[in-house]
Length: 376
Image (cartoon, rainbow, N blue to C red; front, side, top):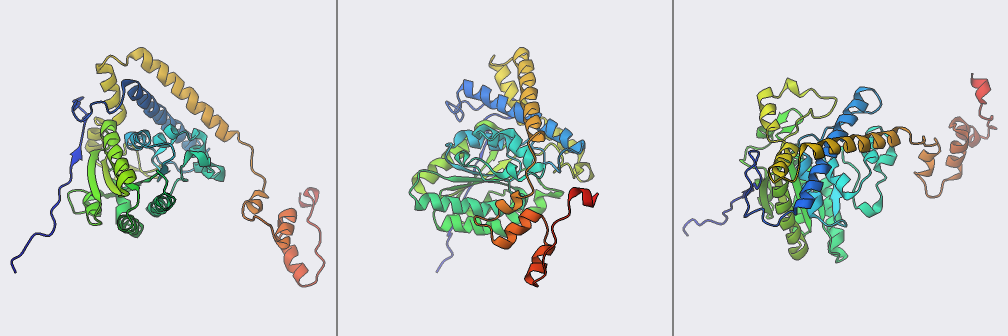
C-alpha cells in the first residue's frame, strides 16, 4: 500500500487593529459599536490605575505579593465582553480587567492578595471562580463546569485563562483531553506572554505556535493578537458559537506580553532584554485603543484627563474599602469549616485552647482559659 497523508492542518493568526493603527475594516466590521469601544478603553484605563495602586500597597507593606496585569488587559476584557454574563470565567491571576467588566468589585482582588479569604468569596451570580495560583489547576475546573453545563442542557459555557507555562503542566493535557473527547463547551484561552516567570516560551514549546497543542487533541485551534481587543472579541465569539451549537472546545493562543515583572517578588531585568520590553510597549493594548479612538474623533485630551481622575477615585475608594474592612473573628475558622461543629471542636473554638481537649479525654478536669490580665 502506498503511503498516504492522514492529517493536514493550518492555524490562522487573527489581527484586526495593529500597533501602527491599521484597522482591518472587513474583519472588524460591526464587531464592536463605537460606544462600547469607549467603555472598553475606560475599563482598561481603570485596570491600569488599579495596577499602580496595588503595586504601591505591596511596596508599602499593606499587601502581599501582587502580579501586575499591565500589558495583558485586552485578552481578558475582550473575552468577558464577547461572552454572556452567565458563562463561567475561570481565571488564573492576570485577568483583572475582564473580571471587573463582569462586575467583580475591585476590593475582592485586593483582599485576595492581602491574604483575606473574603476576597475569594465571589458572589455566585457573577459566575467567576476564585483566582487560581497553582499553575494549570483551573483548566480542570473549567472542563468540569462545562461538563455540568452540557449535562444540564444549559446554554452556557466555561472559559479558562492560563499562561504559556501552564501548557507544560499535566493538568493542562488532562483537561484538554477530557474536553475534546467528551465534546464539552469550553474555551481554553492561553495568554502567551512570552515568559513562564523567567523561562521563555521557546524553551516551553519547540513548535511555531502553542495553538498546535490544541490540534493534538482534535479541537479547533487559533492564534490571535492578544493586545488587539478586536481580534480577541472576534475569535472568542466564534469559539463561543462553536461551544453552544456544536458542544466543541476551542484552543485560543492570545499572543501578548506582560510589561511588568512576573510579580512584585520578581525582577525581570535579570532575564529580559530591555529592548524587548520597549518593543512590546509600542504594542500596548491601551495605547493602541486610545489611538484608534483619537483618530476617529471619539476621544480627546479633555476626556482623557477626566477619565484619569475618575479612575483614581474609583481605585482609591476600592483600596479604602479593602483596608478598612472589619477583621474577621478567630471563630470564623471553625464556623466556616463545619456545617455542624462537633462538641470537642466547639469547646476549642470557645476557649481558644487545645490543651483542655487532651485533659478531658484523660479524665483530668480542665482549667479555665487564663484571662487577659493573667497573661499580661
